[in-house]
Length: 204
Image (cartoon, rainbow, N blue to C red):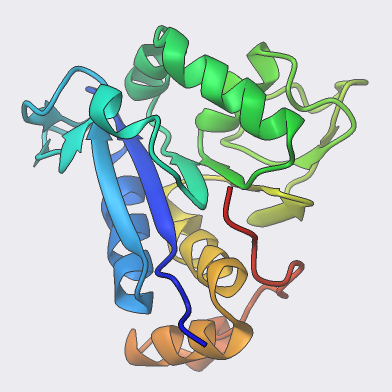
């Protein structure tokens, strides 16, 4: 039986955290996913938070209505603020969260979900100070990567590799994650640091 290639979309906006964008895109592509960097402001080059210039694969408007298996939101305060201003992205996030379609968010990006009231009853993490650690709406965790159903969140640039590897396990298998991780030559203490909480996600 032919297995379709997982489709991942990463919205790209000025001020995004470049490590999170590049690490996630790279690891997911190594695993075999098709990753689209979709420019919120079209297909022009994007200057990230530390001045690195990133080139989108396509515009968000051209990509947003096509099928995707995962919508992945990178952090970076400026980038997240720009994503917050994109009404079509917010609408898609609401739809995906309502339908339990896979969404991933790292660093400051979980705060975008919180601002839309999309974290009710969820276990979640994010960059320190961007979420309310005492919230009664959601349960804030300090773990590097947190999986709650179809939502996966992580804390920042330093946890991006583990975040991306967790997404590989969800989109493919735990075995594929191990293969990709082994090739990265990480110290043994880090290998498979975080358990795989979910099986392969379903296309939506």
